[in-house]
Each structure stands twice: as C-alpha cells, then as structure tokens.
Length: 391
Ligand SMILES: Cc1ncc(COP(=O)(O)O)c(C=O)c1O
Image (cartoon, rainbow, N blue to C red; front, side):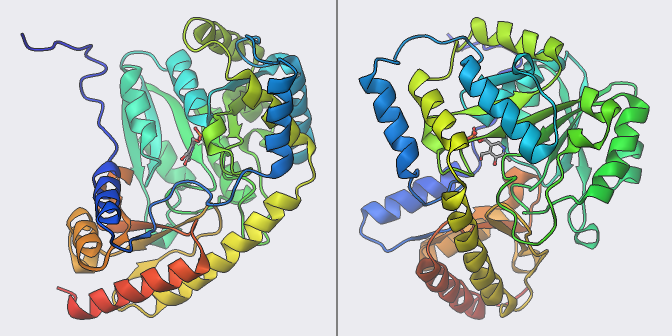
C-alpha cells in the first residue's frame, strides 16, 4: 500500500547539506583527512559555568516539568536582556522559551501563517524557513538580492513583493548564509513598508552577538511602537554561547501571540528541558568574557579565510560582517552542488553548496573551525582550482 501523507508534509525537503556531510563522514571513516567548512555551530565548548549550572540543576532535582514556555526566572532574565541590550520592553508574559530558535520560529509560523498566506523571505535564506512555511500550508515568496546591494533587500524591492496575501516577512540579520548585517537606516526603510502594509516581521537575531565590524547592532522591533507591535523578536543560546545541543531558543512578542505559542507548546513539546533552562539562565547571568573570546577568534579566522579567497581567480564574495559564514560566488566554475561533491572527493574539503539557500552558484564556507584547518582547506581548494580552470 502506498503511503499517503499529509499534504503539508509531502513536499517538505530533506536537508540539502546532508549529502555533502554524509560523504564527508564516509571519507573520514575511511581514514581521509577531511577539512570541514560545513559546520553550522561554534567549534568551542560550552563555557564551564553554564555546564556547572546544569549539573547543579540535576543534583538539586530540578528535573521535572516547568511551565510550557519556560520558567518565570528564565523569562525574567530574558526580559532584562532584551531591555538592556536591545532597548526592547517585553514583560515576562511577552516571552516564550522553546526547544531552540528553530522551534521558536516554527511555532511562530504555525501560529501566524494560514493556508495560502504569503511569507516573504529574502534570498539567500536559512534553509529551514521555506520548509517551515510549507508545513503551515502557507506559501514562500522569495525576494532576490544582488552583490551590488550587498546581498540585502531594499525597501523598494520589499514593497514590490507585497500582495493582498502577504502576511509575514522573515528578516535574518546577521544572516546565515551570507553574514550580512542590516544597519539601522536600512532597517528603518524596511520597517516603514511593513508598518504601511501591516506585515508581521519575524526578526531572527540569533547571530546578534557575532558581529565583526564596528556597527552597533540594531534590533528591528526597537525602531518604534508600530514596528514593535508587528515584530516577533527571535533569539537563542545556540550560537552566542556555544550551546547548540542544549536546545534553548526564545522570542518576545505581544501577549496575544505569546498566548497562542503557549497553547501550541502545551499540546506539542511542553517545556524545553528543565536542566537546559537552568543552563540558559546561568549563561544570561554570566559576564560576556566567553562570548568576546569567541567573537575575536571568529574575526581572526574570517580574515584568514578572506585573505585566502582573495587570491583565488574568478571567485567573489561580499565581506561577511557577522555570523560565521563566508558566502562565495563560484558560478564561474560550474554548478555548486556538483562542484562541492568534486572538491570533497578530490581534495577532501567539505563546503556547502548554495542551492539549499536559494543561491545556486554560491558556496557557504563556515569559519567555525581552527585557523590551521582554514589555512589547510584553503590551500587545497586553491590547488584544486588551478587544475580546474574557469569555464
Ligand atoms: C539563521 C538561523 N536561525 C535559527 C537557527 C536555529 O538555531 P537553534 O535552533 O539551534 O537555536 C539557526 C541555526 O542554524 C540559524 O542559522
């Protein structure tokens, strides 16, 4: 009997990075020395005080259900974080904690997007957004960007993409995969259009603390009362605190939206792990030394990576200002998925092809790996390119 699955599920695609990662692991298990530029997570360990807080939680028996959207203590700490760092007033009732920012975004889209609603997504985009939109029965509409505009959308483009069905814009700054960071002026122009057309904005700020240029970070919802009312601000512990496995993400929004997320979580996951919540609380309360250390390291590695790519003929990129990815245009060398496979097989370097990010021809290089490995990987790619001339 053929399996008949739900219509919202049947077109959901698997991870485009999987094929490369699987092949990289296969090569590694055969004893090959693979340089991995595929990582979507910091290579640093979770800082010790955070681990200790989790151990203490277990020892003290903090191992039971908590409120579905997180403990009051954790939500209070998040509320303070929003106020202090983002100039945003979200009370405890306006905050929901979920099992990673991915889960947070999934819930928001489930709550807001209805069948046939259009969700605007600037391309290149994080791979999961369009799949989440599909799972809600809504439709993704991509807004393409160009290197000329630093891979960012403009207010004009945004307005031209809006129809009577447009419900949500997903904004991600700093961006995965491009590393682009929108400045205040650019955000203000986008905000004006969203307010004019009453469009909700999911502002994915997960890479907020990983910015390498002097520009001050600007949270979208801080741009005014009307924008604040339309925005759901998403953040999480994964990237800034090297806590990907702990699965803690959160958002700030109106009490009404949080109320629906609460109900949704009540009947699906219930609370994120109690122990991870204690770890997250400790992370938010500790000084930022570990974050500063990681950010400085990432910046050094980014610069090493850029210096190496600058020497490669026919390859261009827009300087990443944040996150830990460099998104390079390899289109002169062919189709990125095929190229990634060949580079992996020939010189054992894993890079993620752009197709899954809505950017065929591009390659995503993660610099969440050591400076030595970056140098080694770049040397191999450079040699490979010299044997595989531009078409
Ligand atoms: C842009 C972006 N948003 C959200 C997430 C989700 O992070 P997590 O679910 O680990 O909190 C990621 C992770 O790769 C990401 O790159």
